[in-house]
Length: 325
Picture 1: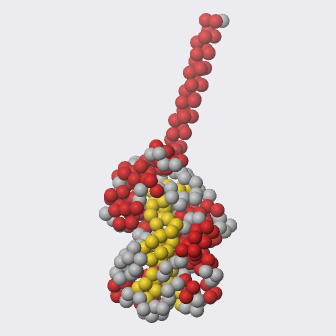
Picture 2: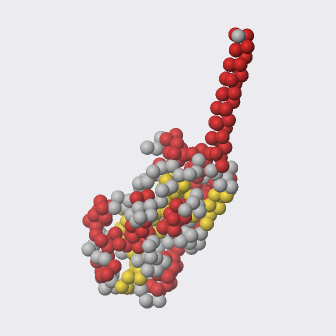
Picture 3: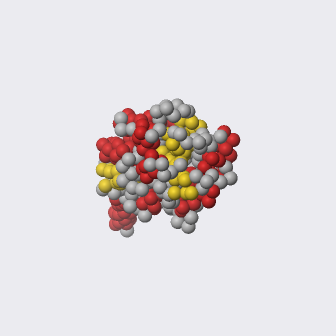
């Protein structure tokens, strides 16, 4: 019996070990298969900052990983979160406040939170700019009462920023003639004399404002220090921001607030790929600076500043390796 039993047990053991090996191999295959053949990065309009930087990041990913990536023009942060949630894109540019709303199902995402949303990195400040004509008598947010004011496109991040800033001044959209216009339309209406002020949230200098300053002249409205403190206390995703003098020709230094532009990522993407993509991003920032000077602020050291949502494990692995808490 012993003579025949030992070979039988050995054969059984080899079958079990082979099955275990197949299971492990299957796991690896499944992880690889969750990578799309063409990765899409949701950005913004062609005249903004997101689209050109998104193209640069797509090229970095294509050159440094085994995935081809492409940038897609979109309506901006809010649309990008919905595209990520519906799995139409895998990465997306977004303001950190909009990512917070999407994760928690608040504001424009009430009842429709984005379940697969995780953070990869914050990139640079998105400055809240309150733009008025150079000859305007408006010198404070309080002076907007009774005026014609653009508060951004309906449901946009700009609209949310405008509501929150007005709130600390005791104002609402009912206190003036609110118009829901995108950047380009806001600037055109100011230039034509059909608008008194416009809220814009974008990296400064913003090309649309630069063009307006060169033709008609502009001013930026300061936000008082006590109001900034009140706003940051109520909405922690804001940071204090100073727009240096002559960022726009002839415009004085301006005190305001900013949110953070960030890269969001689908939690469905494999950890190793997101690790490689994060590493490639921070090792090739010079390519992005050549596209837009806002990329000068992209740094590993402040990549988690203002990030209030979960970090993808692949990005987290990269930050831990670099001593970033």
